[in-house]
Image (tube, rainbow, N blue to C red; front, top):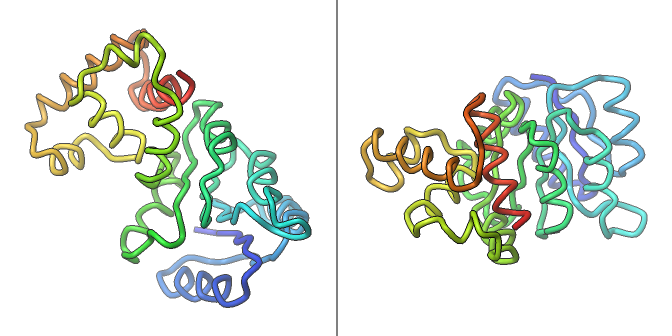
Amino acid sequence: MRIVIAEDLLLLRDGLVRILTGTGHEVVAAVDSADALLEAVAEHRPDLSIVDVRLPPSYRDEGIRAALKLRPAPVLILSQYVERTYAAELLADGKGAVGYLLKDRVTALDDFLDAVERVAAGGTAMDPEVVRQLFARNAQNQGVTALTPREREVLDLVAQGMSNSAICAALVLAPVSVEKHIGNIFAKLGLPPSDDSHRRVLAVLAYLNA
């Protein structure tokens, strides 16, 4: 796939370029600022943008604000920080194609590459710590509080972008059990039958916005 990278640290930026090109992807631009990111995306129309949260000149939130301007195009945030408000906003359109990984928790190359491909394909890839911080802030919604502990576990894994089969493996559950839990989650959160991939994103949003 064709990828744009926005990362101000030279060594990390070059490292990402080497990893991605070495695994068959094409990095069409690797930039160090939010303005350069927006220009590169407008020029190259990549399949995915990988963006750091904090970019010059103030190193506060320029990167993630630029990422929001790119939506609904696929965006993968790769950061040292959890910007909770912006992370929830990235998910707010309910269209998927978004990820949020923490740099110091990416310990397996295969997991990172899986997240890259999943987000570019329209899915989600959320670091469990990002999910934990977002969920910890939001626990008062009636539909959310009606979830059982097991349903919360399942929804936590859905938020990380896991498929039903991956959830089965993680929780040692049969496929029919996972399907039942997800069906219960949809019902308790008031999500009527529709495209299941869309309902999965809406279920996560309901949890985050409780």
